[in-house]
Image 1 (spheres, rainbow, N blue to C red):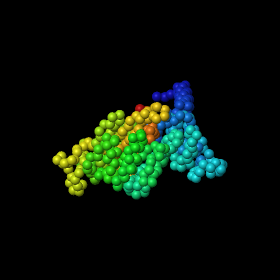
Image 2 (image 1 turned 135 degrees about the horizontal axis):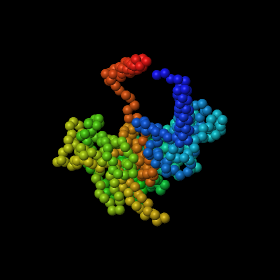
Image 3 (image 1 turned 90 degrees about the vertical axis):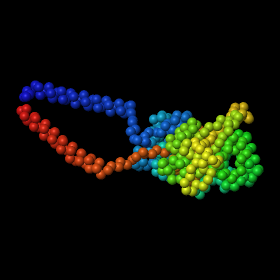
Image 4 (image 1 turned 60 degrees about the vertical axis):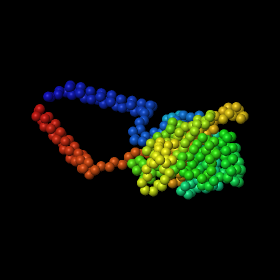
Length: 455
């Protein structure tokens, strides 16, 4: 078909008008994207979006947050810091970020103790902290610490072979003690042989697996502390030698004989039956945020009798395939109903609370006690397993009446590696290197041939 000049002119005008309108639409969309930004995170773990825990915590902050990044003008770290803070500013509009070249303010940098390029200074509620390695977990923990009007002090009983919060041995809690310091909980040892009373400024006391029996006077001090309304975390072990039977009776707790074992651990890739995975948690503020299982090695089961006025909640419970093994752990083991062994599910952790009348204002004050049938899960050896760290931090935050301060789990990528078989690789190579090019060439030739026939 031949086209005269008028038809060609109209077609040319139509094409020009289409290009103008298309450019106008693109310009309007660009303007809207700047004025009304919309973002979507399609990563598998949502690592470009703040976790629900951080979002919930930002909603609790009352007042502006000022972040100053001490970084050189052309540093490649600027973009990463901006993206991190932007994720926070989506949920807290009064958070500000300022970039400062450290070379221009050497006195201020020296006063704040800034030592690395890209270090952040975070201010909230009149308090300030610095952050050397920015990240969601570290920044949220700083905001948690700044929100505390003062650091909490938790005492660890010592003098009887207990696990120590500054210890470096495998059985000690040094790594966990450092994590507590990050969220504003300070730890200190307490030896009742030299310090015959528990200081009134302590926010809690931890009994972490004594290896020898306590003296009668020390037990009396502990009982008095609990009866006065003190907060307590008791980490028990099988065949507990501490002699704290009166404390257990005061809390309505009985230790079952033997060690908890689970016959199904091999199916989960755990090669020792005394390593108990905790997959199902009780409905409690301590365990509600947990999404991964915790691992309790060498745990003792608990039995609880309800106490008048106390609320008792089950935190940790073993699977129905578990039982308390009272015999040897060598060789093949199985449940023996003719002994003192008890079948699962078994209680491995309890949270107790009651409202104690206030002495000064008259307002009721809640006393809190947590009893866990294992201390290994917080040790330097096993702290990194599953949700052990998150569980421990949640316990301490709840214990010192700061359950709003959540433990933020690290982000993980489910499967960053794509593994393909040789046949799949060959198929993909044939598809992209042979089939698709051949198909495009064939379709182009067919289109040319049909158009030629129409002339």
